[in-house]
Image (cartoon, rainbow, N blue to C red; front, side, top):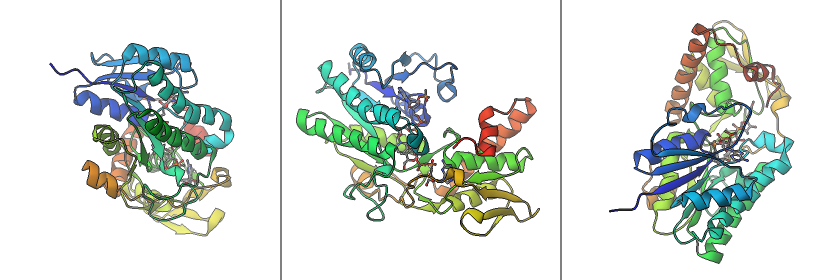
Length: 365
Ligand code: NAP
Ligand code: G4F
């Protein structure tokens, strides 16, 4: 009888962790996920998986090597997906030391937990690397050979993670690799990332529950894909015969302004743009009201403005399709979800969260 594959996912309750859990369960894996203690048990993204016989949750923390060593020893995973991170770039300017501990040293802790338990020949490791490594980009589009130029405390921490994974691959002959993932979004995306902030606000504005959305740099360009498609590639990277690093992207680039225009369109509001820089406004063509404005509060000390990935290697070597979900479909999926969410919250009389109010007033970045 074939041995069952056992996956350990750090960051299981995050956007990617939830989709990856669903994907691996559908492939017959035993899935173990790491969650951390918080004062409010907020596990909405994985609530539907809890109670399934092959899905197990454990408390541990990326800042606590002992918890990781103990858990890896107990679970004895055949694959580890290291997704846990302080994943917000803006927040990394406010909490740089914490970001370095979790996003840089945390990776080392996972690698050492595998070595301490003598699993380096049986356990493959996927590291969630990022297009932010290209930062102040040195070429467009970016591929596996493009030099890195990290441009935030988050990216600098992730650079350590990338290199330490590569080092352990060469020094100890471990099957550990990075997926260099470009931005991927979904209806499960955290509410302070720009795409979700836009789709939620477009839904609220369309339903008369918010007046205006405040954004930062509208000219910033991203290669946005659908998170559900990207988790398949994480798995494919670990099924390849050789441990290698891959760029995962759609190969299509849009500005924040273009994302907002399309999201508002799907919410039933057609925008026209007037003004420049901090004075630029998105105006509802039908009512003449300003529904999008720029706030310097959302500008970053250094901003990455030109991410555009070349997924050729993943396409040819892994057989992954970067175009499964188009940009238009992604925006439509997110807006449809948030239109329904905002309407359902209203019908159920759900109180608006503090976060929603803070977002509207620009108090949370
Ligand atoms: P996410 O939604 O923010 O999820 C991150 C997860 O990590 C959360 O479940 C979080 O727990 C957990 N976590 C944070 N600090 C932790 C700690 N100290 N100990 C244990 N768990 C901790 O992020 P995502 O979008 O799914 O991204 C997954 C990974 O891919 C991250 O490493 C991110 O940096 C990287 N990445 C993301 C993208 C993207 O566009 N989404 C692109 C490239 C790379 P809580 O739920 O308790 O907060
Ligand atoms: O949505 P964002 O916050 O994502 P960012 O910074 O690209 O980071 C995400 O993708 C990375 C992969 O490239 C991941 F590694 C990382 O973990 C995370 O998932 O911002 C996207 C762009 C930025 O240029 C930002 O300056 O949108 C611009 N932006 C404009 N207005 C805004 C806003 N970003 C946010 N969060 N909020 C705004 O109001």
